[in-house]
Image 1 (tube, rainbow, N blue to C red):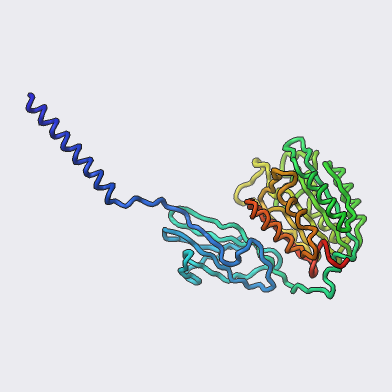
Image 2: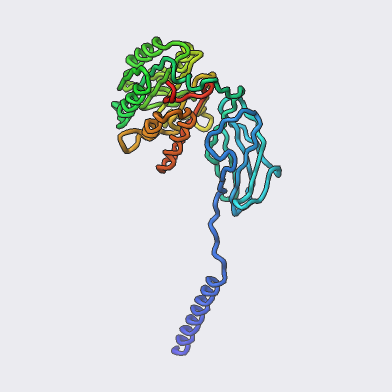
Length: 375
């Protein structure tokens, strides 16, 4: 009996030693498995989120980084996918370079890239390319556009909402009002507007515009994007459904149309420091819901949104919202063209660690600057 027990103990010890040896051998010689990762995408061209071109053909290039075989590559332009097969592939230091020549449509085009491997799908950030059908012409005295015409602005700042009040819109509106008045604007400033008050303010503003002038509308507050359109949300608006929005809120498209009608040969500018999403999750209709439709303003009208379609604009932790804090920092810069101003806003936010690139629709005739050196 004792011999049998001793033999069992010896056998168990031998098996344990062999298991430990096998485990040690396996740990020393077996290469650890690397977790699978979805592809990485780096834009080569266009390298910036926004680009303006004067030709419809554009060669775009990305660099795809993937340890696994990539099963699908797609450039997606304005919702239409272009599947790359072998054309334009090249191995470079950043990974695999893929190029495609695309045909743009007049106005603003949205472009992103999709790559798929066994670990998953990666969708790149969107780039926005504006195709100008007419070359940009520079007048003999370009700064005369901004320097020797009637300049009128309406500022609407809403923050005292019953639900989800905001901190900075009124501060933003007052700060911009001070800058615009120094720059020669006649400013109508309104805060915490009900829908009835807002309608009255817009009528006052548009009735005072004249052709060949500069008209500016600035809005800070809650904004809605429903069925592709942007809406100003008055402080008394509490829409219960999507169908209520058109009755409770004011459409930006309607205001832009009125500015263009009264001032067709001048410069119409909109600054929209508000969100561009649908905050009511219960309203969402799923994948097929339209998220954005462009206003496509004619030459002479430009809309500058604080953020891209479907995204939120941050109120900021300081005295002013993120977008407005950069706007008022640069708007007084002498001879700074409007597009350079927007680029400085974008760069300033990125430098501060915020990923909220402004989004532009439309363009002016020639150069536009708020503070021309010759006035």
